[in-house]
Image 1 (tube, one colour):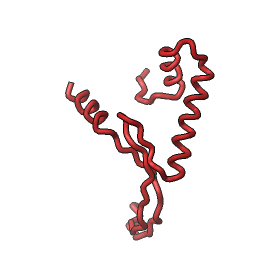
Image 2 (cartoon, helix red, strand yellow):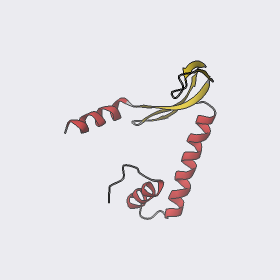
Image 3 (cartoon, helix red, strand yellow):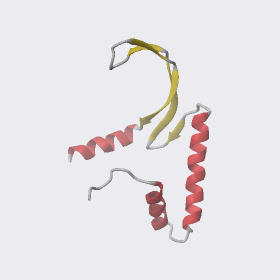
Image 4 (cartoon, helix red, strand yellow):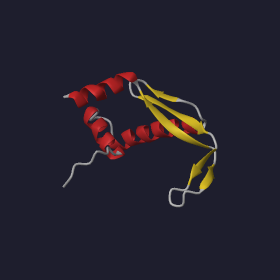
Length: 102
């Protein structure tokens, strides 16, 4: 069996439960769900979400441009759109870099 590189909401709930054993798991789930809702609502308003020491989520607009169909090579117009990007904070980037060196 392979080890997954993905962390789920349930594993976060378990980690918080281990740190705060007196807090019911259902209350931890409510808090985490509300936190994620706040982040989502902020992003939908196209405002930045800065998580200190972790990074920043923000909406970035992409301009319309010309592209090519990879199968036929025909030019096609790609519509302008919006996407959510995440920029890692400098302290977290440094921790990731130093971990790779080990």
